[in-house]
Amino acid sequence: MIISKQQLHQLIKNKLHNAGLNENHADIVADVLVHADVKGIHSHGAVRVEYYAERISKGGTNTHPKFTYQETGPCSAIFDGDNGAGHVAAKQAMEHAINMAQEKGIAVVGVRRIGHSGALSYFVEQASASGMIGISLCQSDPMVVPFGGSEVYYGTNPIAFSAPSADDKPITFDMATTVQAWGKILDARAKHSDIPDTWAVDEAGKPTCDPFAVKGLLPIAGPKGYGLMMMVDVLSGILLGLPFGKHVSSMYHDLTQGRELGQLHIVINPAFFTDADLFKKHISQVMAELKSIKPAVGFEQVLYPGENSQLAAQRSEKEGIEIVDEIYHYLNSDVLFNQSYDNKNPFAS
Image (cartoon, rainbow, N blue to C red; front, side, top):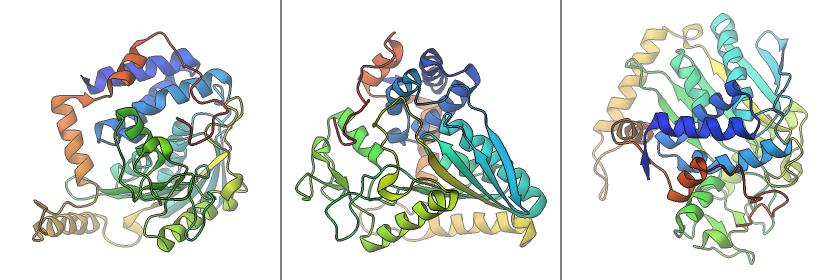
């Protein structure tokens, strides 16, 4: 099913508002989800709406959160999300971080007690759109077997980065510290397609191509990804006084309760370190030089980080966004949720 960006945004907003989010918060969550679908990151787009709607309806997302923001040092602050929609809290926290970095050169803002916040690229591109460097890290529920282990401990614990260029196209990357994010497994399930056997393991700890058989994800690059996900967990969990490692709440356990998740935003103002215009010019130079590199066999060209998503967004603007039919029908229906997630095993179908 192909629909326009505007139509998808309205469908998502309506569903979340009907589930109980106020109109402003529903609009922001829809904006973050459409951002993902527009860029071809369908694992963090409309596929998530039914889960959000079920959690909102059952009280696990605070629909009237009392956000608080407290500066704890010259360049540090804590934003408490009161277990509201993570997308809204993370966006507002990034706005505070940008303002702090504009004045002081750097900002480190911990975001405490939030729900799932979607694609981190949305938040770091808030920073790059303001001429800043944005970095964001967040913890997630334990779904990954550590290198050398056979039981899950850490989450997919993503990292995102974005920097502005001279032509307003940022250089961006947003990655899970697993070979693939759990959302990619959900996307494969929705499409009833196989996954590469390098993504995940089954109940016996063996590689699997069946997205419905997944019982654990694999860290990217073995011990290196394992180390990165540990770092993210420390910075977005332990540092903020929140549950960590295997103690992080499951996305699907008890949808009546808040997730208590953590996220960390770091914003750097290039003007405090170099000439801001020269910085952007050099970023543009890097992007151009990467694209000019002779491609390897089997590749048409070298893309700079984030370019693939930018190209997907350009196609989406012209051709519309492709949405799985069953997701489209759900968004168009009067059904809020189908008891699909509450108290289910995190790897359940």
